[in-house]
Image 1 (cartoon, rainbow, N blue to C red):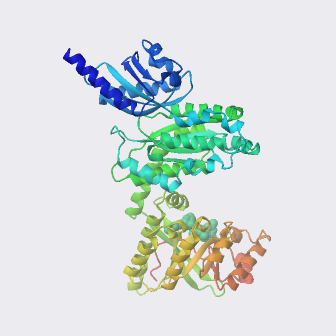
Image 2 (image 1 turned 180 degrees about the vertical axis):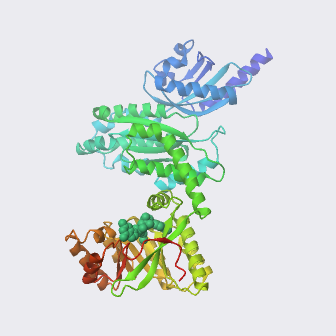
Image 3 (image 1 turned 90 degrees about the vertical axis):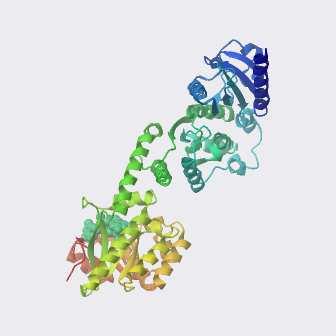
Length: 548
Ligand code: C2E
Ligand code: MG
Ligand code: MG
């Protein structure tokens, strides 16, 4: 008798506790058979509590959600409880969250606390289509705003070092909503606003850990969830949301999702995040040939490959496992050597262009630039001891210029070698990517003030070059090789080169032409007034600085 009372007390305590947060409480056996039900089951499942008892809970859950509930119950078996898990109810189509607990005194039972999803409930009102266009577009409502890329990365990184509530790693989920942007364009044209992405944003925010959801592109989202949460369920929920919010577009939007475990060796969270961001960017920037679905399926492999590539790159950088080739830059008037450009060479001697691009993509450009800089400084210092005064241009990624701490690190490095300013030039590459011009300007001004000349590389290759020249004061401009190589055969290049030269003259900037391969080109360029030249004609890049 005492035991039975004890069990009742235990159950009552659990009921009281669960009801504080739940809309309905259901006790099931391990096979899913409902033993007890209370609360708003009619609203949630379209069935009164008494009619649920005796049946199986799985009969009331959307097929796509059933595996999530099975997995959750398996977790409860091992750990005594499971974390909030998303499910969709079958009859009502409602999105629900369920959490579960076991009571030691009732070993065969699992108590499920169900909560209705507010977003679906709100979206269930046919408000968007029936009401006049809202004054505030749902997508612009601050409550619907998702995290920006930097804030999302931060939460993701933190989530990697701290496991979820069950001691299980969090998951990062990728959700492709193919056709959403186009569908929304049509809805906006009809004056219906962007209720749909507002509703999706609200749902994702609620389904994610610490609101960590972000929109990667028009038709892609990422969000972080508890281990037990299922992206399949969310897919179904979003499908339901689309049908409710914009039924006329339901067929035009294809939702697919995939999810990856957010795990990283302690101390490598940053690299794991780099890989994740890079992989996602490759996709959203259209650099991947894969379709949404293929990407979603392949993303775990892509991510693993990216992590492996980061590890290789990191060891190349930290172990200085590269060599430097030097290529001369000469005065076009008298052919005299002006300085060398240092060009990185990896073990295979192939062009480092793709490696540099990858380093930029995963945020390792600053490390790479600093490693190259220290090797160049060491080489210049060694040459000086042997009586050779060389000037060398170091390629610095535009990304590095905007990276906090880079200017200080490079300054320290330059000072530690005590080379003469003027012996080192800084050549800014990938200038088309400089997003934060004031930050770049501050860094450039600082080095120029310390006596280090600065050159803008590949001028004319990017669409924003003129803007850079307007904002950044530099000493040299290197005219992109694409104009130079073809100038003999392509007279249309001449007016462009002329214009660049005139502009640089007016700004008191000297010009360098790269990729000069023959004497005829020298003649044309010298005639146009280019100051310096670089190319195979004057010398190919060679490993090591000349010793005499
Ligand atoms: P870049 O800075 O514009 O370098 C010039 C590229 O043109 C080099 O390619 C060079 O080998 C090549 N080149 C030079 N003369 C000629 C010529 O007459 N004809 C032809 N066809 N090519 C010529 P490379 O070494 O493959 O480097 C490619 C790019 O990789 C560089 O373009 C630069 O953006 C980047 N890079 C190379 N080394 C470094 C580095 O240490 N740090 C950074 N951040 N970027 C680097
Ligand atoms: Mg260069
Ligand atoms: Mg160049």
